[in-house]
Image 1 (cartoon, rainbow, N blue to C red):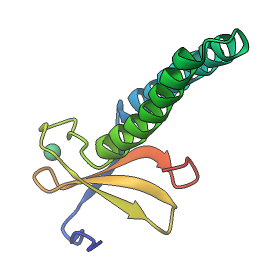
Image 2: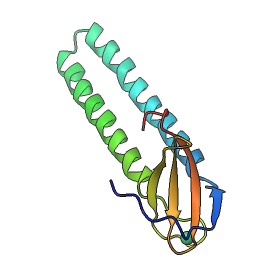
Image 3: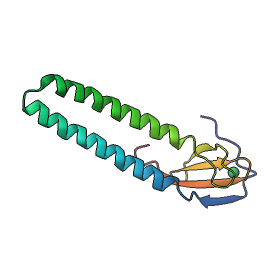
Amino acid sequence: MPQPEIVNIITSAPHPYFKKWFRRSCFLALFVIATLIVLFAHFANNGFRVIAIVLTISLGISILFTACYLLYKLHHIDCPSCHALMKTIKNKKMSKYEAVCDQCKIVWDVGIDFSDDF
Ligand SMILES: [Zn+2]
């Protein structure tokens, strides 16, 4: 992926709310997935095979949808000061994600590391 030009960027700041939102979404997704697994175990153990199969499919769709949605949001972050859609780049030196606002000339540290699965 081509890296955007960041020569003219003059300021760097932590993004005020993206990390919080991202973490909350991850926990919510884990909760829903855990609930589906518990329901699956319950129905599978009690002989409800059709319901267990439907739950397995729902589980697969949930995981896939959540992963795609979070990845999409990570690469489509709003600028906190001008609300423009920003480009998300990987800061390889710091091994973290940053969002660049071309209008404000600000690099926002979104608070997500490479080690956090994405
Ligand atoms: Zn901006």
